[in-house]
Image (cartoon, rainbow over all chains, first blue to last red; front, side, top):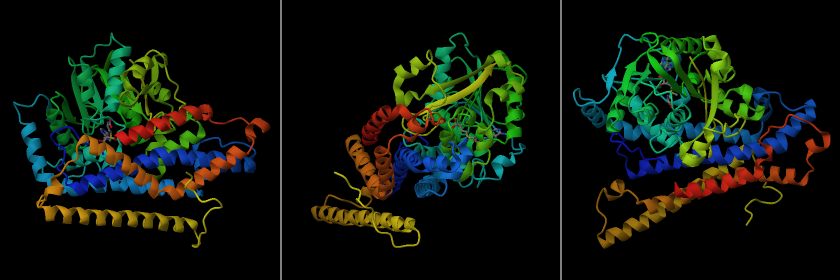
Length: 396
Length: 135
Ligand SMILES: C[S@@+](CC[C@H](N)C(=O)[O-])C[C@H]1O[C@@H](n2cnc3c(N)ncnc32)[C@H](O)[C@@H]1O
């Protein structure tokens, strides 16, 4: 298991660490080894049977899903993946509950006015959308916004410590591989962009927001989210890491910023947790707050339209079994359409597949900025060894 | 050395999945018990030698070398726990290896593009193994 590198990390005893290590290893086994095994079973048994019965191969992800569902290996893969997902959060609860008072004190000290480099602005009147308040996304009990006391930040700590277990090393030492890979890539690819104001939508605990500050130290970086406990934690976390980031509680569907006020509007792993109608509002808001010449960029799961039926099925597993009701509807969208419907010029649409800098190292990652990688690759957007991050967006 | 049983294994429950779960639970129980015996021996020895105090184990952090060794052992542990599932994959692979490629014969299209990457995959797997050991 990855140990968090900042001051807010939870103190854990020997057994708690061992349990987390085990769950991380279990996830690596399911998502690397068993995922490979499931593909072999598909190629050897399920797909040939499908072809015999229909005289053709499956045409999309749902057909693959339906065909593989009765298969025993699929059942074990799925059942173990659900078990592991649940165990991720369960492994965090005991140390989190014990450490809660200490955590609150530390956060208060880190965020003290006058000392903090960044800021935290909450809006108690904000109505949290039901797509957040009514479900426990990815089996995370309490979700992002669950609060148990005044000024609570436990949900943020659950997410941070849980992600460290969940990611089995594939999301970077500071859980910021996405931010580091992408912010650095944009700087490399568009040296003239020189953003002065950068916005991160649905930033949760700001783990990928801070990377923008690292790569563009001159810029003012703001992260917004609807979940107050995550934002409180995000603020303290950024301060602990010595980064000046401003966190604001806002709904990305109606941003409280003036028109043309940002050079970059970014999000990562965000849109797939938003209902279709909300996504359209968010894209329109991104367009509105962008300056002309500014860049909107969303790191996301790759769209089904660009994947083989098997890979589409594989990525949609979460939509069916991981409490992610908006996952598949998002992945069924065409990203380019989302952009032009929001007002972006179709000619200014762009998409990238960016190698994880942590996995591939700097050289491969640098080369990718000059030599585009195709989306149709079974490592794109898939949490597995050799992961590649998918991004789409447009210049205004 | 091959660790799968040729000719398969007998199943007793209406659903063979239950036999497999039972296998995992028992493998796990065996590991847990082994651990308990080892721990008991270690604690007894240390107390006898007077080198272990209350709370010492909970407060202990492994150094990087021990951490890396444990990561490798943990991977083996987990692989062993689910070895019974690997049998289905190996049987499937063996069957495919024995058969001539059906799509080459029938000229069917629509195969995912990532197929001819077996070599790259094997490489990535080898890399993953060394990496897991480092974890
Ligand atoms: C999966 S997390 C995003 C993780 C993070 N950006 C990353 O890079 O990993 C989704 C986040 O979006 C937030 N969210 C959901 N709907 C929102 C909305 N309409 N406006 C702002 N934030 C929202 C949730 O509270 C949650 O923190």
